Length: 629
View 1 (cartoon, rainbow, N blue to C red):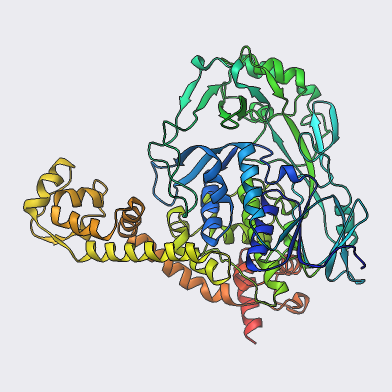
View 2 (tube, rainbow, N blue to C red; view 1 turned 60 degrees about the vertical axis):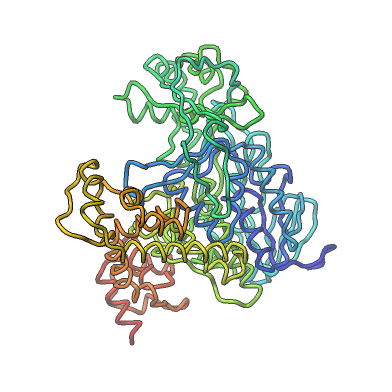
């Protein structure tokens, strides 16, 4: 179709966390990319909490960074507090999280994107996806200003803007987030192409004036003594003393009674909202309704940035009428004089059930059209960003006639997320958890670069500088591991330390490696007891993260080996491709439910088919025999 403007390789619609990563990745790989957003001043805006990472989400961010994405770099440049969660558990559960400066995060992401030579920007509202006459291939987009932009691939990252409807009590109005209008038109265009559309809900809490809070009644929460970065390229972070603090508060029965007084006007309970919200991030009214036996719920007061007194009240997400929000808020200890800058609200939006996409994020109905982020039914900045990264990579590779870039469940949390979406679907906003990853001992946040940076460099996303840094670190890890494995330690040096640490002494010389698995010991303890070993180790590296990596590899060697064996056992199923045009109706031995589910989802591999709810083990065996024939 005729356009005033030049043709592009890739067009990205939406500049939230999915759109930002998609545009950055596509441009970095070499595709001429256009990023279209309704507001260029709101790129990567944090619509909800001012934070990046968290349980399992932190692993996603480190994987994005290891591949060469942007979220980790931007989070480190805009963080105000850093913490590693779950440190009382094993390393598979450790998850980095940071509080972010909301405005600085958005500004920094735009600066990073503007460094991409192949990336162009347009402030506009896309209302239609253009395709060939048969609808089988995307050719570009049309905007509300009537302009046409042509491209070989289109990535939709509409977030909560697709027919977004916001609710505050009995008041509702169109919008994509506070102060910004909804996007109308794309959903209808996709339905015309044959896509199934659904509705989901999410919400956000009120924002408060930090000067109006009585902090004496709250518990202070500091950042870590030794903060750790998200990005493997970051060399320094603000010290604990330089970081901002968070605060912990509690609701009580009086607060709950005040909230209940507005239930008859709540869109959650009066039928105005009938779509499903995130189970693991419920509104405060949902919490006190579902957990009526609890007389208190924890709240986290989080700073919005370095240079603002605006605060975010995590745990108090609500769509109750504003007067009820305000009165309940001022009943919380420490918030008696609280000033509310913005009320909480709920938002309903369109999503497209994700059985309609492939592992590459390309849609099954229309070639060259990719979905990423909340459009696929996920919730969270990190979940959106990793989908955007994969969509950007694969859209660019498609325009360059290269093979799809796919991450398996055994390779990355990103692979787990995408596979879950396609095979299991979602009827509520999908959130990543460590429990979703069966190989989580392999997919730790600390080894994301060892797993993925070489892959990222191979596809042209991870820079040469990043790759050289990765190689140097890997060499140090290998050398230190060999030293600990080969070095002999003696009772006369070790026993005083072993007694002090409360563990059994030695009866004969042993390799240092045999002591590391003891829970009471670290490599540092063993080094301090043997000056010669310490000297040799420090000649290899002074990087604490290298010491940590070697220690994890040795301590958990048995578990890691079993996980690798499990991955190898499943490899045949994961690598067995299923033809796109396979007619399941002709496979008579399949169960009726298995046939229906696989015909709807169209799994790409035998392994993927085995994870579809309703597909039995016998169905998988039948399919395997059929494919072998």
